[in-house]
Image (tube, rainbow, N blue to C red):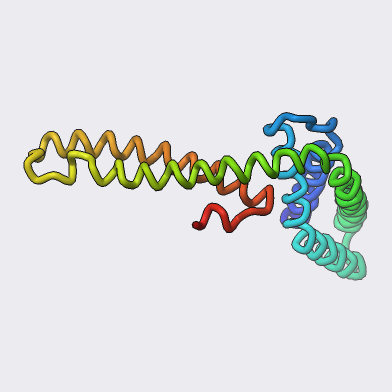
Length: 186
């Protein structure tokens, strides 16, 4: 029962959160606001099959338990979980129902930002190519640098690479959300 209760609660929470994200006001010309809405659209799309299977599985398990001869307390708990599951299912369907309207609502903003994101990824790709060349010119690669100076430069390079990694992750998410994942792989 604990596992069923937990999964029902998680489905309700997820559905409520995604619905709230989907019905937010039109993101206009703000990339961050549009990204939040697109993340919610992506999350609902990614969760559709697993969530529907989870709801169906939980419903089947609870109906099976209900058919078993149990004491009043277990029967009452099963009935409560079935009600919670149906509420969870309603909330999930409400979230899914918001998707088409949200997609229509963000169309204009999405088109404008799609072109801007594609251009910025192109710039990022060129920047990384020059950074690779810059990285290879670091003093840590030169034998004459010495161990101590090489260690210092390696520490600086590690911080520098961490920043590049963070930027890569941000750009990778944008390419996924704006449906240009191939741009980041080039």
